[in-house]
Length: 206
Image (cartoon, rainbow, N blue to C red; front, side, top):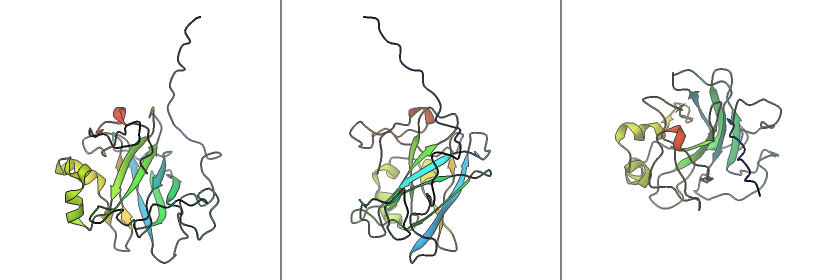
């Protein structure tokens, strides 16, 4: 029996607006709802230029730190918080989500949102996290953040905006590249942190 050759890999982008985006995909709850915030930022390439056709997906607990297991992400009703959203960037590379501040999933844990990045030129999606900036003690005790040097750690922490929202930029390459994560086959975080887009793995971190 002849051995079959593997199908060659392809990049995961660019994307076109007829398949992946859907109505209210980036609204985990309705804008203006009690407790709602805006998570926003810009996706940059290695040269510092905005990427105009990336897609981001986020997973997160609710404001009390509960892992949500409810349907409705693909057909938003304006009331049900499912903890998952998808958003495409505009021509300026800017993304935005309407969501809530995630609560810590355990006492003393640092609150964060899990993020997957799809963009032109990537052979696979990239996984990372964005942490809330306020609880400095929890951030200092977080096992992932404490494994990084201070400059790398900063790439995973959002800044709080005057209106209560969060701003967090993503840099796919370069000297201030965002930290990306490797995951084992069982979904657990690898002890080695991927600081290069070539090393990012493909397990759902949420």
